[in-house]
Each structure stands twice: as C-alpha cells, then as structure tokens.
Length: 155
Image 1 (cartoon, rainbow, N blue to C red):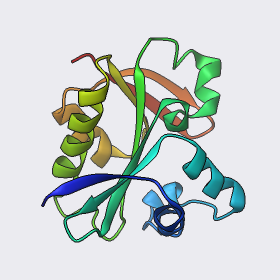
Image 2 (image 1 turned 135 degrees about the vertical axis):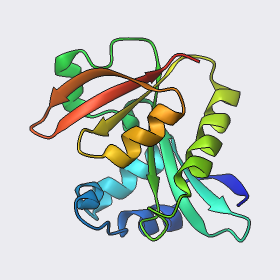
Image 3 (image 1 turned 90 degrees about the vertical axis):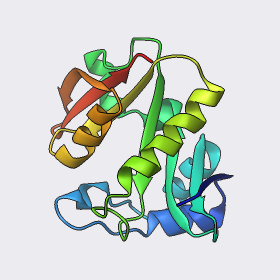
Image 4 (image 1 turned 30 degrees about the horizontal axis):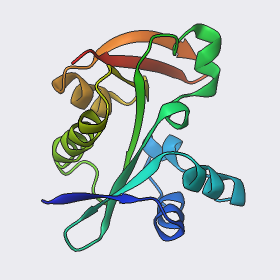
C-alpha cells in the first residue's frame, strides 16, 4: 500500500471527525463541532491517503498530540516531538498499522531529528504493542481519570 501525506483540509477533517470506532476504541470518537474542526485546521494535522487519494488516517505533532492534563504530571517536559495518530476505523485490526505507523515515523523523522514521544491510553494494548515494535518505551503514566502512558523513541 503506497501512502502519501496531504495537508489537512476541511474535507479530510470532516471525514475524520465523523469516524466511529467500536468499543473499547470508541474512546477515540470525536465530538463534531466547529471547535474540533478548527483545531484540526489550525494545528499541525496531516492527512494520510493511499494512491487512490482515499483517506487512510492522519497524524498531528506538537501540543495537538498531547493530553493537556499530562502537563500537571510533567509528562511533556523532555524535549521531544509529540506525535498523535488516528487510522480510519474501517481499516483497524487488519494488520495495516505497521505500514501506516512506519510511514508516519519516516515522514516525521525526515523533517525532525529530535526524540519522538506519543501518548496512548493504557487500555489500548494493540497500539502499545505496535509502538513497542518500533522502539518506543514507556515513560510516564498519568490519569485524567483515563490512564495514559507517554512513550519515547530516542532514535
């Protein structure tokens, strides 16, 4: 599967905001509002499409990839590039995660040469396992009350 990075636009953002994940991943369902739309358009969000221009997923970097409450726990004090990802729920659980995540990491690492950090809900064992396969290690755990883990990749 060939993947391509596209700048986020209103069409991609609206599609992403309407994605509906199955339980327990429904935690990642978005609230559709002008505010969430503007967040995706005004922050560093990027769409990932296949060679037919079908939306596969997205990623974001910087503060857009952080859980705000994590600052209270010192989760974001180390100098890292924060990364957040989301895959089309119709494509999850099909073994495509490694290709998708590998493409995102390659894209970010071509632009940034600092350590990477991501934040993942502790219950999301599927994602944690994927991140560990790519060399990420658990760092800080905090609750919001959902328990999150930050994971670091030091290159």
